Length: 218
Image (cartoon, rainbow, N blue to C red):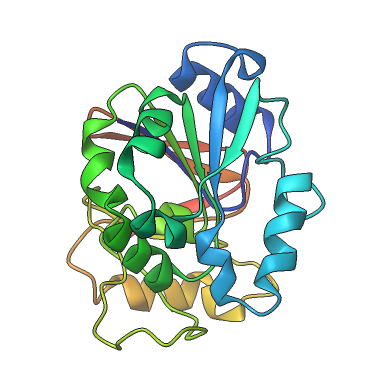
């Protein structure tokens, strides 16, 4: 599986071009599924999910002119026959995984069975946004907007790095370079701190930074 792990979506030309390269076709010829699950653990999550789909919140993500766009809600999947959604997932070109609460997203990826399927989806491009990116790495955070057990996993660990999005973003003062450097010192994996103009591209285990902004490797 090929991954494009973004901080805020497809926020500039370089990240857009990286996505097209991974897809191997124009976006207008590619199908996509959007997973909004992580955002429901945030205040007004349902409204935020709707706005992301319609392109009214954040950088382009769902509203990029995809040939087709569907919504895959992880909390519904355990009660649905797999033959109703697994083939659709296997045939899609891009899986768009939105931001929100990383711990909540990890839990439902595991409960739905998606976490087991992801390594088998070799042709699909996984496109993460914030928590949707962090969940694939060795480090995840939680906003506490759920009732999951405290010891629930916070990330899937499919990529051997830690990822810290929204570097030096005004609305997240805890994401200053100094704070993230201290945090990275406690994590036994390479830590990438990326701003909203930066993404991490992973192909066959090779990690590449795509940026028109700034980033740091600790």
